[in-house]
Length: 365
Image (cartoon, rainbow, N blue to C red):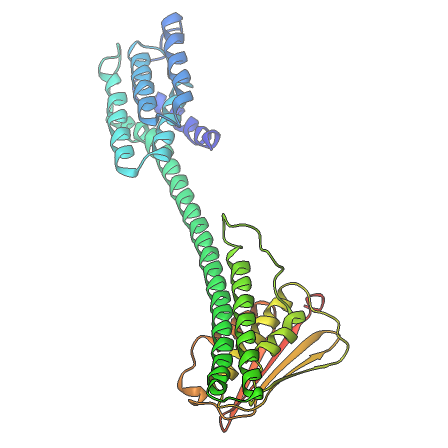
């Protein structure tokens, strides 16, 4: 970009050297003149870290150079670059103030230079030496800020998406675990007051199921939280449809059995679709148990070459009706499936809730 600034400024400099005074060809360069040029060029090395100081030194050097009667020429490029650097690296107001002072100081040389005939006609051209590089530097600064804001916004969207994913995972894991524990605790309470071998057996089975459900939920919660930055690696792989039989077993209880049926060739899902299918099944079963009034629940997995279909049906009416409290479950399931190219349909026929999820395989997407 400095090269572009120089390319714009050279014609202006040439034009300005013809207007600022007549009969001012300039004295031949000698050691003092070369020294001033060297100082103005050397200080440009600090233009990024100390742009205001650079502009001040360059302005003083160039003003002294011109006041001593040396010819106009490439020395003015150092002034152009210094102005550009101030506009690019400093906020607008201090940069504009520094540039305004610098151009006034530089214009003053025509009043002290021998043989000069000051002319107002050259002032606009001289001001252009500062305005053009200042405008370019400020525009590039603004563009850089806009790019940085876009990058920060994109990063924030990723962080928000990850937080939402984590909150949904925690919601699914904790909600499922509490629903399973509540179900088995209800069975244990109903059997606790009965003093017969079958009731005691049901109580033991229910307590064992509570122990198993709580342990499984804690392990899965640790696995979810282990994905946070700074945490240890997960202790177990992400769940998938292979864990569905254990999930169904935890959610089954006397009087409200959950049955699982698998149809078609059991080619497993992999990756994100497998996890999405498991989470949808987990949330659907949790809602069916939580809102159902007892009765059988069926889960059907249908494998096809290009997709897997998951169907969950609660044959007992829900309480309260499903439309009264939609909660987070359905939107969360819809978002999970949408992320892997799947779809979700639900129906509520007289309180009997049916859910059908279509999950395409990764290779077919």
